[in-house]
Amino acid sequence: MRYAVRYSQQIMSSLPTTAADADPDGVGIEPERTGQRKWWIIGITGCLLATAVVIWFGLSATLGKVSWTTVGYKVVDAKTVELTFDVDRPVGSAAICTVRALAADFATVGSVDVPIPVSTERVTVNHATIRTTSLAVTGVVQFCRKA
Image (cartoon, rainbow, N blue to C red; front, side, top):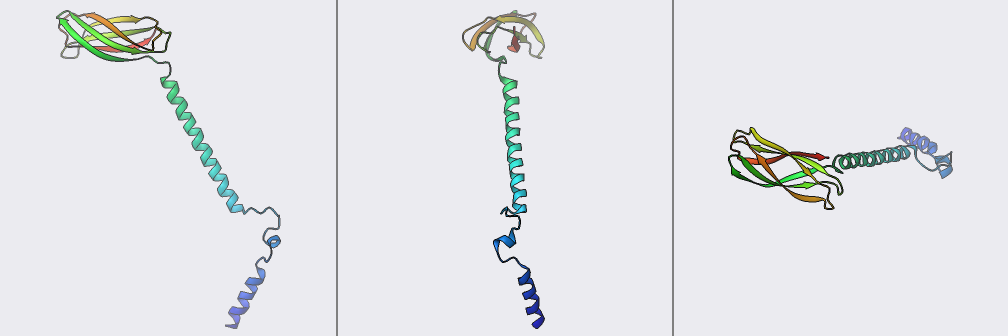
């Protein structure tokens, strides 16, 4: 028991007793805490940069692009299909859309390029008449692009 008391007294005497003894440089920040703070800052900065890059890629892939929606079609007869479609594009730009008439086996039986003129509206409703080589069952917009 005497040995344990002496050993604990030696340990207690080696511990710092004042703030100056605990922090001889006078900085006051523990090195372990500084390392944790540094990794938190690096992690948060990395997440913010990754978010900014994802937003930038998303916007660059969609802004200024031409998109379309097939609104409806009507098979008039074995040689004609009428198609109605919307085109969404930047104001002040023209577009060209390729529309197709399809047979029951999905073969293209008619196709035409439709010029979409410049408009002050972003979304315009357009109509096309497609001449076919045989009976079609549907009409669709294949794609649109800036003119």
